[in-house]
Length: 166
Image 1 (spheres, rainbow, N blue to C red):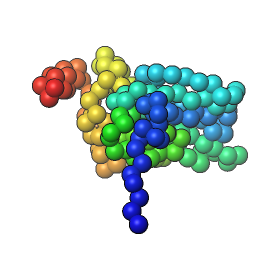
Image 2 (image 1 turned 180 degrees about the vertical axis):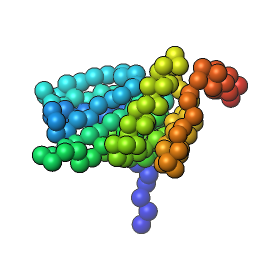
Image 3 (image 1 turned 120 degrees about the horizontal axis):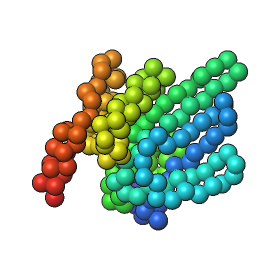
Image 4 (image 1 turned 60 degrees about the horizontal axis):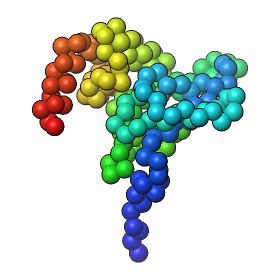
C-alpha cells in the first residue's frame, strides 16, 4: 500500500513558516537573531509565534539551562520554503525549512553570532546575505576554521548572480 504525499498546502494553509518562541528567564530562551517577521502572535507571557514568508532567511537561537549551568545552546539559519519545495523539519519550526546553518555548543554558537555581527557591520542585513554564505559559515565552523567575512563586494556579486538567474 502506498501513501499519497502530503502537500505543504495541507500542512500550512497560510503559506507562512511559524516559529514558536519561549522565554523563561535563565531556563529556556528561544529567540530570533535576525529575519523579517511577517506576523507576530503572543500566546501567553512566555510564548509567542513569529511567522516568515516563503524564501525569508532567519536565525533561530535556542538556549536552555538548569541549576548547574547551560545544558544546550544551538543556532540554526533557516530559509522559509514555498508550498512546492522540499523542507527539513526542525523543532519549534512549522512546517520546517531549508537549513542553511546548524551548530550546537556555545563556542560554535558564539562564532556564528560573531559572523552575523560582522555581516551587519559590513552594512548588509544578515537576512539579505547570500544563502551560500551561511552554508560557508556552517562548513568552516564545523571544520574548526574561521569563516570568511561577508563583504559588500560579495553581497553585490550575489545580487548580480541572483538577477542573472532570473
